[in-house]
Length: 233
Image 1 (spheres, rainbow, N blue to C red):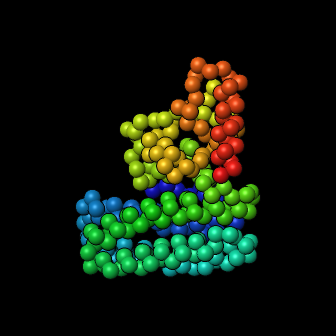
Image 2: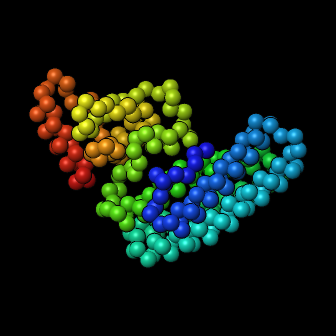
Image 3: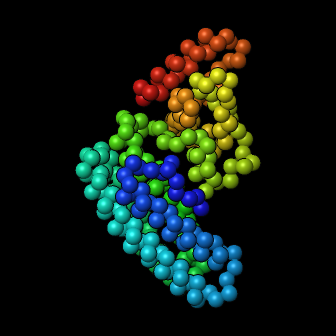
């Protein structure tokens, strides 16, 4: 599992500390689940009880954290608060439902492993970043709020990107080519999402939109035209 770092910060010290602790608890739960799935257990009953305790701790702490995060969203008039609250309810309900598997240690570990991945990737590493962006700049609803490098690390939690075909993307940096794995490329194309370069902060553009035989001025005009269209949307 991935560790919390400043890339996940929502620019609120108290909530950031809570997120960091939840990442740690989720990491412990994920490791325990993996041990069970790999049959790396000597005392299954003890490990099952330990797993249930970690799950309960994750559920209880997240419930307190979500309440404080929702209060923070109300204080800053966050425009997506209802959608965010709904996401909190879904995650808590999924965590609570895991207790239905308390007598089946392997099913419990399997479902917990899936939940911790989704919890970290979909919510803390994605949806919560809207809070940070709202407090610092206008929200672009289709923008992925990570650098390409960090987003690849996040996607690698759920997908094996190592053997995938890479697609070439460019930005405004001179002679720079960004290698985008196929999973992320398909997301950018099908959902019309956007990523920005961490250096020039311009939108990454798929290179097949350009003919390399054209001169720089024409290429730059096309780049600006596509960038303006994406910003407008």
